[in-house]
Image (cartoon, rainbow, N blue to C red; front, side, top):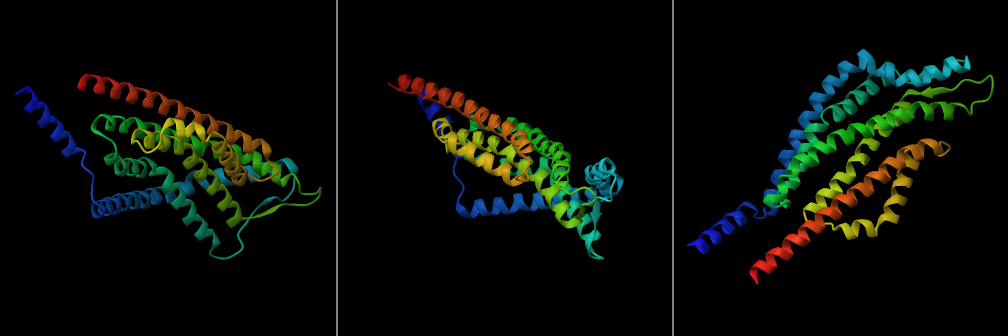
Length: 269
């Protein structure tokens, strides 16, 4: 009777963990993308309102500080009649991505959850809860180094000259810097998730540490001006630390899985 009960529980476990077909995966992906898009649009509406309240003032603040320090006409210029509207829309959309990050991050994790078994799914909330503060921390890190970048790059303007920054190029740089660093900070969480799903082992993660550090340094070098080495390392160091933290968690998880499999094999024998 006990053996029958155990087999029944195992069958129910397999049914809960059965793989979805390709068509079901595509339907699931479409649903997740639709929910994420709606969340970004709603966040964009909020972002449109916030732009007038304080966001635009915060974006141009580093430039104003440089102008005050230099005592010149350094500022941001709009080249076309529609550029102010276009850029406000771009700022609102980027803010929508940041504001709605808890929603679309959850959708990503929810889409990947079927790859985990029942025991490992309980860790999904931990992944999700870790990803959100890391994303915001990454955005904050990008924002933190922005004044230093603006000060450094405008410092090359000769005495008596003024740096007139094109609004489109400046806004593009600011927004891409903030969002790109935010996403980069979340990548280690997905590395751990892939490890828990059995796709990536801790050994494979640490084996590629040289490549990972090179990619991180190249990424931060592209995200910051080539002359600003300080900002590059200010961003690279926490990203490298997160990479090794992801390996540490994956290593502990692999050891637990190995120990559990050994015990199950011993019990079966």
